[in-house]
Image (tube, rainbow, N blue to C red; front, side, top):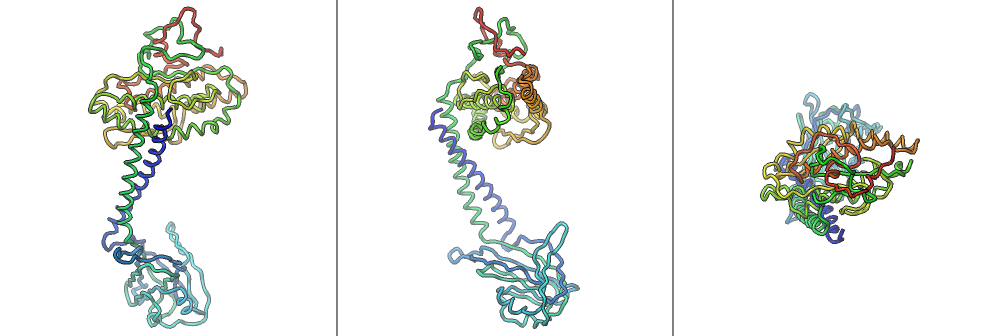
Length: 490
């Protein structure tokens, strides 16, 4: 792979993900700003608070180091609204003041500190502060920054200011006990400008990232070798191109996506225990490559819808990514078929696992709208059993797809695990298990090729087992005396 397109793909993917995150955050902020409105608040539900002392106080608010902005912005960073209602509409007092003034006012006065509220189930956590004095009526004090007193519901609104502050709720006459219903709300003048800023930066970053990803995909596909067509077979390691005497009319011989994998006779007993570590570099690279494949599929979908053709460079790239992914899967936990480390390339190699897809000269304009999400539904139930996961597709634009795994029954995983355990104790990978594993992978990749819009031929409901795809066998032209495909003899 040439470094230029690959670097564009890597940088573009990171920018696109950052841009998506900023755009999503900006959208949430915009919705919040709309819900908040001109005078609205995000409010808690009303909760009952009871104290057998003279006052209810909050834990210190702060220290707050910022406040409203100065002109010309002239907006509040945060504003708090508190509402208190006395039991039986008894006169109540609520106020906010500097923590030092509250401490001085309630010195040697028994009061209750509200240290936390749990909603499910509701429970307030209190801290009792002992004292023997009775306080003066709170409304007569002059240190309150904001306060309200009287019967019924009393409301105060406080723009957040620097310093350490305390909320105090008492009976208007300073008596005890205190029983009130309290609710709180908050609003911020920063939500709207923050939403606009995040959306502008996020959309710009996202667009730049997506453009770089597409340029990287096109560059990698244009510079890479074209996938082989019906003119040649996928070679088996050691020079064998197929099995002599193979029947070209065998079911599956005409399917235009071919997956092959040859079992290494000398596969290690225990290396599979650490392959999850060894494949980490490939997993990192494949993350970026799959992002490019996903985005390239969307672009290709629009191209197919308008022209009936799949852009050749994007097609080459997509085949290369699937081939790379299959090699890593074959080495690791989708087959464990070899100990030979997979190469870092999109091109076909002599690696004992390979994938080829014939390039379609024409594709249906209409099928692109439905095949990746509707027509493939019957296969998804089977794929879910094979992989133990669920698949989903994005509906933005006319096409696009992504995968999301979930825990569940995985036929492929269980078979590979059984084969690995037998290998660990006996030193042999059972050929029957391996052939079935290859068949399941073949089914899976045929569905992926169809969903990625690369072919219009519907994947067959058929389990073609064994190392060699029927299509590769039909394409092979055995030379006289050519050896059969490698076989481990088990």
